Image 1 (cartoon, rainbow, N blue to C red):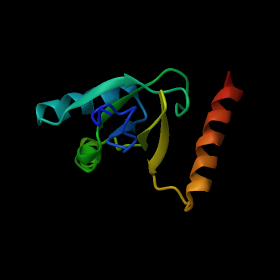
Image 2: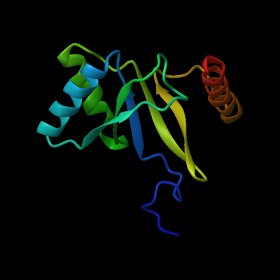
Image 3: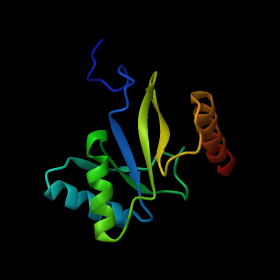
Image 4: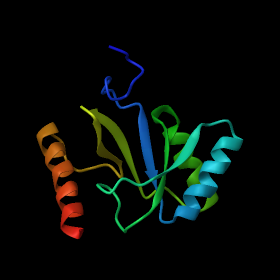
Length: 123
């Protein structure tokens, strides 16, 4: 097993940062890159998108606090942050900011399913 492949190693090592605007995400990602922090703009997955087509920042888990601090300093804080958890051939997204009031893994799984159901209902 190749542990560098996120689909095979389900340790969450990347996060998605969502902001109120795709433009904010572009500006923040550009500034992060200037500071030497790898970040890239990706389309927000349908399962976590709150309003149609949008873009978010995909980056390493270890850089999330620096990115959140920089976003606040730039005047457009992070709205939500999700860890990316591999599940066979897809990712599941677990909200890690704002912190969930959910404590047990079973409740967290239920939250993930509810998010998926909400997205299906919108289609």
